[in-house]
Length: 274
Ligand SMILES: O=C(O)C(=O)Cc1ccccc1
Image 1 (spheres, protein in one colour):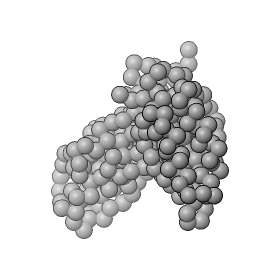
Image 2 (cartoon, helix red, strand yellow):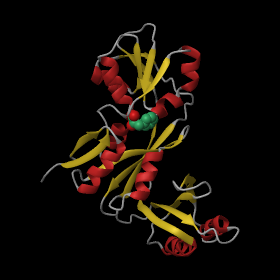
Image 3 (cartoon, helix red, strand yellow):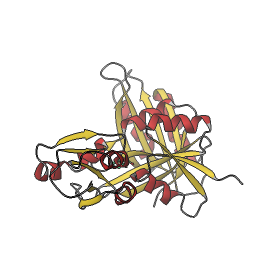
């Protein structure tokens, strides 16, 4: 049988690669790196890869907006799984010394803000598409450049760890989603993600929408609003709740919310990460 091809935010050595390894542990798969999240969604949509792993939210920095926007807009892609991982950042360089520039994914730079202000004041911060891409670039740049990333990236690109665990909070966690084309089957320990926009025609519509979950005793694990990419005042709400969309209480709550919405999409029902 052909090996399962799984796309991930690459190159090798990213946190997303760690998430993929956890999700697919024990399975025969080949990781296919993509430098950009939109490219990876495209590869899943066309079937170039069987599934893909992308970061979606971080406990310090919040959502990865591009992932949320693509989950809403891409009609071919659904969430089929999730992975939550602790994230530990290291400062990587060709050798210890004085640095003039530090490269990383914008979320990694933000998660290490206190360290950078304290230890590397005035050093230029440069955003890259991933932490491993930063390490890859630093490996062939001037010795005064450093990257923030994983230990795997240091090994892979021939860098050393010059400062360990530099993130602002020890509790830093990132949630990744696994995306595919076919919905995941029900396991009994599932979660459902939805996105919707509410009618503006009466007061209290968000309250009413939340009430559909509350009065059925359905636990919410996330709520967030994003601009609907129209004028100010138009939002898309993202809600994750416990249960599968085919469980009777969840199905009834979703049916009620559809009636209040101008836009509604189930992003996926999938096994909860425990
Ligand atoms: O760049 C990476 O390594 C990623 O996988 C994205 C990311 C960046 C920062 C924290 C968690 C995930």
